[in-house]
Amino acid sequence: MAVTRRDDTCAPPAAAPVPAAGGRRPRADRARQVADVLRRQVLYGDLRSGALPAEAELVREFGASRNTVREALALLRAEGLIERCPGVGTHAVAEKYPHGLERLLGLAETLREHGEVANEVRLTGLITPSREISSRLGTPGGEPVVYIERIRRLNGLPLSLDLTYIPRDLGEPLLAEDLVRNDIFVLLERIAGRPLGRAEVMLEAVNADPHSAATLDAPRGAALLMLERLTHLSDGRPVDLEFIRFRGDRITMSGSMSRA
Amino acid sequence: MAVTRRDDTCAPPAAAPVPAAGGRRPRADRARQVADVLRRQVLYGDLRSGALPAEAELVREFGASRNTVREALALLRAEGLIERCPGVGTHAVAEKYPHGLERLLGLAETLREHGEVANEVRLTGLITPSREISSRLGTPGGEPVVYIERIRRLNGLPLSLDLTYIPRDLGEPLLAEDLVRNDIFVLLERIAGRPLGRAEVMLEAVNADPHSAATLDAPRGAALLMLERLTHLSDGRPVDLEFIRFRGDRITMSGSMSRA
Image (cartoon, one colour):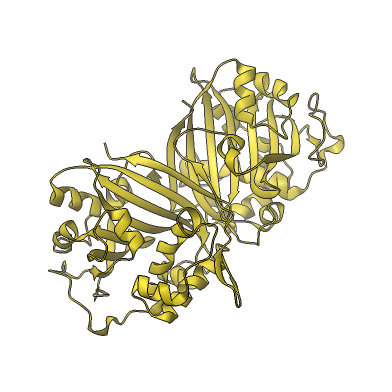
């Protein structure tokens, strides 16, 4: 690797890349670089469910030292993406599924090809919402709304913990439906008699608090992808406010963005 | 709160919400529910840069016990979103900024209203890329590409660590530009003489490895929002492959999604 170090943030722009003598660079920086490229191949590319190339091959492929490659593999192992079996080699073990950022889909709709989504319904009922909830759902202050709390599993593995608020006129009929096997999106459209339209989403990465971690069978402090989503019917009426904690090791979000 | 517990994942759908006697529910579950509503108000709503209502007021607002409200505040405090000063009260302290999921914008473009983005350019140079990088950038195998590694700061606070790969014909002129003050997106458009078009993105939540955490001045294991993004020119040519680790406590991603 021909590289130039620039430690001074105020340095003038480099004229052209200058090979650094000996390429002295912390191994952890080089390992991250290798791991980032391998990550996608392991998750969704040619290394998905299979053996990884031997270390010697990765050394050639990345033009990196054997120790750098080992450290890159250690990073992916720490994330639970690969496993190393002595005498057998390293292989991909990620159970991480893509959730689309573009089209508004329920989890069971999205993951149909990956297996069966089943919901553990922890809690359902009418609550008197705070002003913030009433205001976002467009319901009169003080009017009860339906609250639903679910753990969502794919093939038995916890994916997410979902807290859902729905206006009473749609939420009460929803509670008579099978919430274990169905996405709320699909049920809501049936009950409302019209399709969903748009949703505003906010995505964050947060460390799981101890209780959320335990609820999701994840280690304490595990990285969660937190999604807040307000979904509207096609006529613009807000009907579904959700706070979703996805296990970071189980879900990726993918989509496309446009400059224009 | 009138609620029904359902611990059996295979239970038949509930007929209607039944108030649970006494609403016996782990306090941590109720605290999470309160914290999730407050989180957005603290980040982007009416509680943004200011004092939070007194505990007694939150108790009324959420119909929750004082202990539940305290536990909810403790959750937000653990995430660094609020601070409690004895004798003064609790106030919002989050320095977390919204990044759009819809329109493809550079960080400085996006955060213009929040302050100045400055990039610490840690490394620039030509590298011989792995097959995966060549293939995604559409460059001939073995042809060098430009690699740029930056820490991006807003008002001095680290936001992200960005690893960027760019085809040589565009990347070399880029290295002659001021990478400290400018977004690569803006520079690329100038050099290519045409606008950027679309980008494919993949978002994940991951725990920071020790070295990435140290690089971003974040605690070990901190939740990171990891973004992999391949950006194309308006004519479809892929020109910018980035691997970005955002500090989870500094960035939220927001946008809208459509059902149709």
